[in-house]
Image 1 (tube, rainbow, N blue to C red):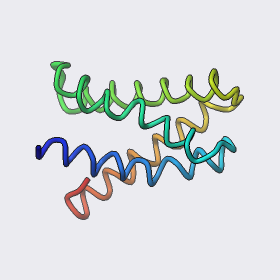
Image 2 (cartoon, rainbow, N blue to C red):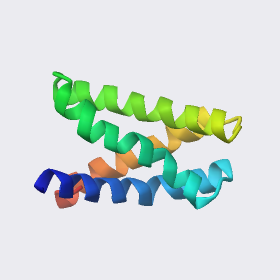
Image 3 (tube, helix red, strand yellow):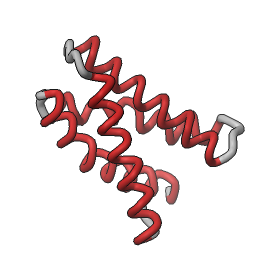
Length: 109
């Protein structure tokens, strides 16, 4: 249950950072913006992180690459957004950077 709680906090944190980036940058609605991380975040936490035998750094690299590419494809192909790669990189970079800063300053997410 503690792992699920940690995931939920991280998921909500990610959504707070990424949804506004996608809404503003790609001009999509809140639900499509929310959908991007709703697809990738659970896969990261419940499939990739527990089952890939990589170092912490390896998991970060694989996980961020996965999220960036899947979210870009989601917006490119489902919503026909031409600059999906750019905005996915910005959204994922922003959530990763603020998440690491928040972890360093406050110990969470």
